[in-house]
Length: 411
Image (spheres, one colour):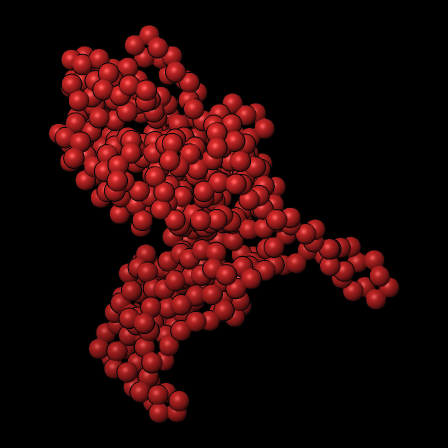
């Protein structure tokens, strides 16, 4: 059953969640409102790369892009998943930042000539905190091996953790074969999955994500700079995340920035650019365009009553419905009046009278709330019960059965 939210809520609450069109001052003799002309939005940038996209962080929606669902070699972008696994292990208390890791022969920096490393020495002991920074800031292949062995006992076992987490966070076209991203035949991902991974890092592991904003790291007497050039760009507020490069693909960059004026966060992905300089410039152009021509829209607060529905077979005859989370997403500037909301109730809870059946637990999902812009789905969130309705007694249930049956005769 699908009903427009405007209709469903008209008798329940004011629809402040859906903005009305903005009008000019009423200056005509007839006192009729005049719509303000909306400035056209120019076409988005189209960098000459293998794949690119711009994602709205809050909703996870792709605002625009090309070829972002095609398989690519992620190269050192792989290390985002390596650090994600490390962050989850830290969060679960299975390892601590102060734990010392003994560096094996396999993790020795000399095994990675000509590639990124943090210069760890075989037999030495290095803290988890230093190795984690070495992976994120210095892109150390040696540090990836050391942490893989420390967490899972072997690189192969750690890779299985990477792929398990990959499935859990919805990376639908990704497979990892190692923790560092050095060429491997069956090691692949997509620009879309890399954006999802970046979003998961920011959302799930905010403390670990802070490391991605650090511009340099000194270890073993060697100071190395973060390869994400946008961290030094004062015209943007970029706070991460990761670079990558492999000769057969080119230069990759997943970047994220926040606009302080409104708190909107965007994630850009560039895959297969021609140089470090160009991947930074193209990433910047995507982010700048997004901040200029999109704006955040927050139509609903958590636990706000949106709908009141009738209930049968319960101690109460009605129930308040809403969401247990605030809803926020990016939309083109001056398009709030084109945002629509609808809800669909779960068929498991709806009777033939199209009311809900008790018992219903507080917080139980009873349907889906969908927001669209120009008939295109922007985001969907669970519609939940904001209160509990317990099952009614025998007489209540009997009466409700009779009512539903009689109403059914006349439909």
